[in-house]
Image 1: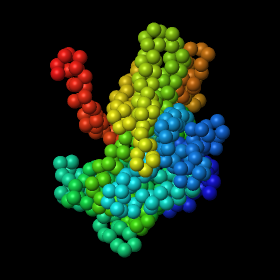
Image 2 (image 1 turned 180 degrees about the vertical axis):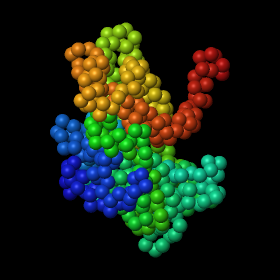
Image 3 (image 1 turned 120 degrees about the horizontal axis):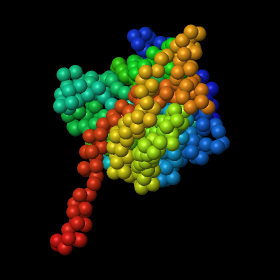
Image 4 (image 1 turned 90 degrees about the horizontal axis):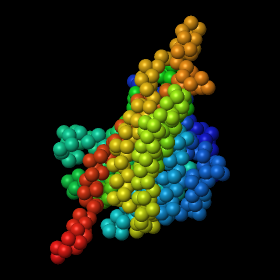
Length: 482
Ligand code: SF4
Ligand code: FE
């Protein structure tokens, strides 16, 4: 099978029979739905750029399984150069779309499941790894989008999965049969679920023997019987239903999240990669999280480039670009954005091979990268809003701008530096509004906070991974304390 084009990808999604609900309505055709289409366009860029020779080095890789050319989003990292290329590819896509392009979660899940199933088989004599590799060969051959599903509903955070008042608050095995398992539960925050062909489900936390039915990892076709998707809302999302061009800000692209319900879904053994091996649940969570914390070093710096570009453009349109304080703010934004990227590159360069041969990022640096991402985009957005001025949140609608009577007033009074049109200024304001207050802010800000784990999760990892003893020894030696 060849790599899919953007057109092939869209056609392949039309063939799936997913059950999807959007704002209380069951929707059969999500491909053309105005609330979904921007996210589909963004995910489709992972196919479109892969067809362009200029981006081949970043977007394509040689499969370690078959020797065939595959999209990097289905590739197992074979060395640190692959890890670096992944981050660069994500920055490129963030720059091109200004939003979440969704396909990284599956890439990170595939790489994490690969090394963990290998180590699990070696320790326990199970046979998950070969099974997983067969599944991955199928994903690569068909160039599929895989949605990685980790975050359970979790209920009362003080209670373990099995202690919850409702046992389904974490995904668990409800039946083990000769031909497979039956699973029930829900996964929240499913990035790009509607645009995926496949879903890989993983546990959400370290589990103990009492909770072994919750230690389950498997792959499903996204339209498997019993799978329901409920589309998540975003700020100002219904502007997409108004049919205009200007007020949406980012005309073509956007991300999406969904609630995923697994209502007694059957999974054949061939697609099961963990079923009760609770001792390996923590390792799977840790590795997936590390890869996804690396991912943010790429995608969020790419979107940050667009935010910086929008702020600088507005400064030009409004005649403030030469002011010393504006220049200083732009430099600060660049510094913060490149620091985000530096974390993604650093944890990649310092990556190491796991026992399966697949490369893993440096865990400490990946967590530092993501902890920066929980803060810096907020400061970048704040500075961009500072530069933009109050019109960012007081601008009348596109319909007013086009109105025969009041449109000319707006054209006249919203004009700033003469060489730029009022429409250019308004379009840029709307883009920045999208990225820092609207649907784009859902991904650039709140998701930067919580995606791939909330800040506290990274702090716990930093405390665990930092060699404080070693650091104290360094200090004692120089202080002459033996
Ligand atoms: Fe990829 Fe970033 Fe979206 Fe995660 S948030 S799926 S890393 S684009
Ligand atoms: Fe994310």
